[in-house]
Image (cartoon, rainbow, N blue to C red; front, top):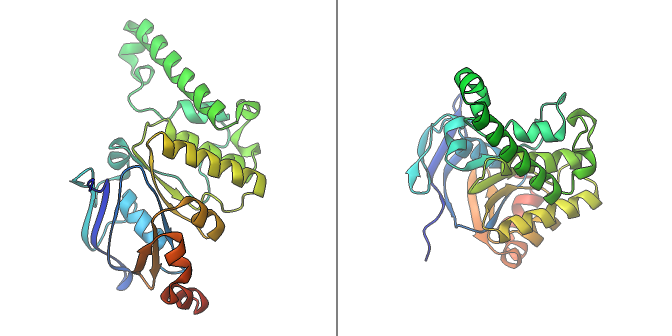
Length: 255
């Protein structure tokens, strides 16, 4: 069996003595769409934040491509090909969709004064390549008609697509999707789901948090279920639907 791309082992994360994540272990296989679900307060977002470097774990290990990354700053994790989106999108509001994408790639020559003065042809070539890539992603996400629109003027669903586009500009191996369906109308939700499926077919691995069970059951295999800071079970959609522990966790309101 192929080694896990992401490995979480014995993860514990505490805040002022409160244990938000309690000895959680799981793996994410390459080229899968893995769902992470659970009632409010289950610890899902804390797991996400710990994996992405926003939170430092109290103990335990997070490995990406076999390398321990727990406690690394977010920008270093980003550069390794593990990228996250946010439940509430965080674009630059006064920049257009196109501009929000082209600022993502690291190490742009135009950011360095020496290259601006003495390597103008190199700067132009790189800028063209970045622009071409951004336009390709905009077309893939069906955002062409709003490419020159300021981000602050977009709908919630369009902003979710921009978040995915910004992630794609970094050429990620894996994307952590934080509630891609939250606040999105049904038409754009179907669009987002279709784009995730296509990216999955291209080889990108996903781990997503989501409260929309139709989205999770349709997209994800396997599905991880958390409750009270612990991992309750892992299985496919059919086994999750029928597991009494999952029903009790949701009907009981979680922890």
